[in-house]
Length: 213
Image 1 (spheres, helix red, strand yellow):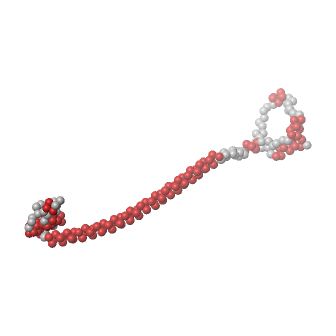
Image 2: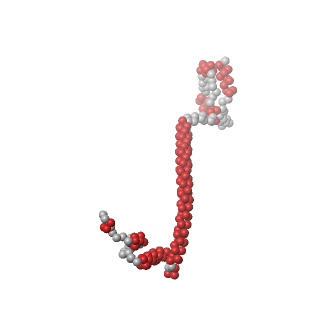
């Protein structure tokens, strides 16, 4: 390419391309006054957009007021950002603490569950041992009934020699001599009372013992 074929780019075109955004780039004026006027118009539009974003009143639409309000808003935003950072750090620390506490509670819960299981096992073993011991206990022996008064009617024991002597003794029979005479006699009232029952004592066994001797 020769030098004559290069496009004719002037300084005004370069400055115009650098000064204005690409979205609003149009025909760049060649005169400096026109360029400055266009720049001021664009800056005014930007300030109006900023004032609308800040929701300023109609009385504070000056550029100085808009810049002061923007600076104050930026400082407030930076302060809020720092406060949020501190809150975030505090929340992270608290979250770590809560996590540690949660893990400790889980460990304690596990230990308590193990202890409860051991206690239940011991209780079941004790109950089983008690039930087994109750089943293995023999039934109580039957107690002998107390001696009733009827036991006193038992005759004293007689040894073998006395029993043999009693067997060798002949039986004695009493027969009335005159039964007819006895029947003819008037019946007299007997004053004999009915004998009372007498219980044998130890002395009743003496005659049999004497006979045996």
